Image (tube, rainbow, N blue to C red):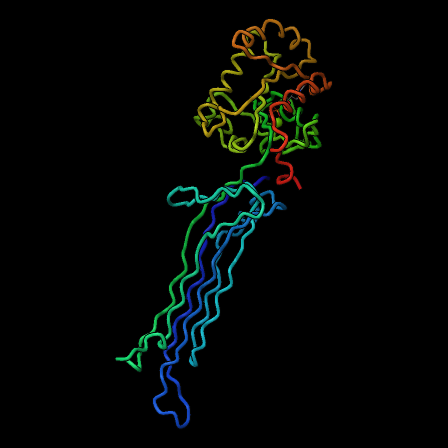
Length: 341
Ligand SMILES: Nc1nc2c(ncn2[C@@H]2O[C@H](COP(=O)(O)OP(=O)(O)OP(=O)(O)O)[C@@H](O)[C@H]2O)c(=O)[nH]1
Ligand SMILES: [Mg+2]
């Protein structure tokens, strides 16, 4: 199961206390104050690692605390600094402050780092409070507590092409045809319950394709699996709307399917509706689909759309689709290098 969301609690290390101490030595009366400072507590960093693809680690462990700084000691010895902790997360993780909802960082590239919580400052020892008027200060500071924070981690897959469609439209079959990905394919709705990635070998370069669960009309109101999975398409360069052309005119027509899908995408927002897209007519090997082709494409043509007919089963039309997708995607921007190991 793809864990693409997690809520974690981070606590920075406590700062070490400053020390109260006076120098003592034979024949040295009234040695001065020599209490050292406490060390700072450890910070916690989040850092992306291209070898990680899920947030599974955070499903089991939610609380992370960095070590405290050492206390100061006599003889002006400062406490050691608490060790910093680095938590590795997959590339493409958004970090959100759970309390305010503020997006703190979008760690979309390998090696990016966020200082998530700071360790507390160490307290000053009494040596630091010495002055002309106070040669034997008994003042010292305690270390500060580390920062605390609830964070939400949201993994958004990085893909060049996203497959969109109603359940059963043939999304998983298509990704199986064009890549090594083998998601489950079955003749019922909601076969796919979690997103999958595949690599499509296009003339313009290896291209990452994302298959997500089907969405239904009303998904933005929480119907079906809702729009939760659309987040994975937020970073794709282009979208393919897969439309089952078998639909008889009494059933939802291909054009109505497309407009319903489109309005879900518009309702979702986040720039998805503005992405370039192609309309793909699926299952064209079936006689019902080819029989519908003429009558059903009319509505599309009137609006200036040109669905691309394909059959993921026979491979018909896949090459034309490949060329069309390739033309929409700039070569330099394919995500493969950061995405699939
Ligand atoms: N004849 C034919 N059948 C297809 C084609 N593509 C998909 N199918 C069939 O349509 C059904 C649904 O295919 P899936 O690929 O599972 O559809 P999906 O869009 O991934 O469905 P969900 O995961 O439920 O959203 C399966 O029975 C497939 O065998 C095609 O090109 N030709
Ligand atoms: Mg599927």
